[in-house]
Image 1: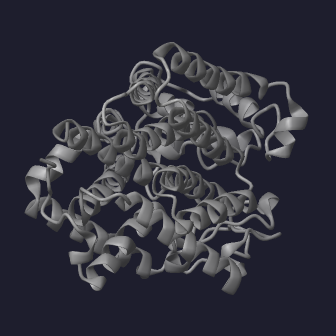
Image 2 (image 1 turned 30 degrees about the vertical axis):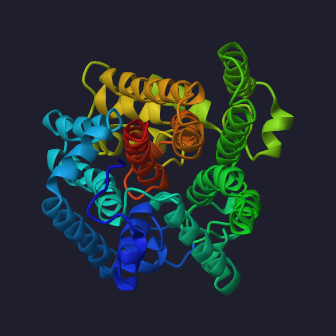
Amino acid sequence: MTQELMISNPSRLSVALRLVLFAMCIVSLGGFRLQLAGIDPTQSFQGFTASYAVYIADVASIFLALVIAILYSKEFFTSLNNAFPIFLLPILAFSSSIISASPWVTMFESTKYLFAFIIPISASILWYRKSKLQFSYELLKATLILSIIIVIIYPKYGLHGSSDVFQSTHAGAWRGIFGHRTDFGYCCAALSGLAFANVVYRKKISDVIVLIVSIFSLYKAGSGGASIVSALSIIAIYFHYALKNSSVKIKMSLSMILFSIMIIFFASMFSADGFLYSIGEDSSFTGRVPLWSYIIDSSPLNYLYGLGYISGFNSFVLPSLQMGNFNAPNAQGAYMEALIAFGIIGPLVILLINASYTIRFFKSFFKKENIVKFYIYSLPTSSILIFMVFTSTIVESYILQSNKVLICIAVILNFEYKNREKIIDNDK
């Protein structure tokens, strides 16, 4: 018998509660933060005082998440356990306050980071556990629709501009309800993978439309990393479905080819200038390699236990970068960011997370029992998790930041993956 949670059918939820849950997660994703903060996106960043609206939205989301966590404490702590090993990151963040130059800053930022995990977990718990369309699929569809509306009606917010609050070099790229095209791109990438899985399994025209629109929107966002995530996820899902009755040797060969392509691609990023330019990058990872070299050579890093989450970069690394004429709000890569904040243990935890998701991918790829159920639920989530986390940790610091798409999507998909395993095992 399939396990049920408190609310197993999303239709039982009132429309108002659905909207509140969506709003809570969208704020956690980083949606509408420009508008809530009262930022004019057409003006280059020169410092600003955020509107109280963004703080009210954050506090309301946190309060609702805590209420849900208390009311459904058993499910909540089970979900936290399922979030291993990615949940090690907020634990490291809080621990780093002990050695931080600004412990209160680190504690405050760590609290914000922690709720980037708690909010999507709480929303997932209250929504439902058994459904062909996962909560993450519905959330991402809502995000896509809202983003397209913003692009069409309010292009001032929906598109990067020539004099942009963040990066004018991305002028014309879609960012939707977010502040940056990369956030929107990762939403589209995750949605395209889930939509493709539903197209193959459900064969409904609505899922085909979602797939087409998500890929088109991803193209308009122009995010190279997100495009890689989308392409590799779709390829993995297709091969698994097409070869569901094939031998383990064939599946192993194809999976190794897929991972070889991914490794070769990232290795070629140091030399394939023409290809990288076509996806908006260059052979220095758009200036990341010189940035990382400068940080290592010029910043007072503590390789043993780090400098503290957020405050370490702001207090020690950022002044050094400004002296070197580098304009970077973070280390532009999760491994370097983790090294600065937590010392050598930080990059090792990032490696552990990638290794864990890689194992899940192979486990999903070779699963034979209840092949249709496992295909539609576990393989898409494990594929998107590994490709998204692997790609983003190399070229972005998103996995270590609050109010970013990556954490919210990863936590929800991680929860769904573990839960599908239990459902499938109980349905044998």
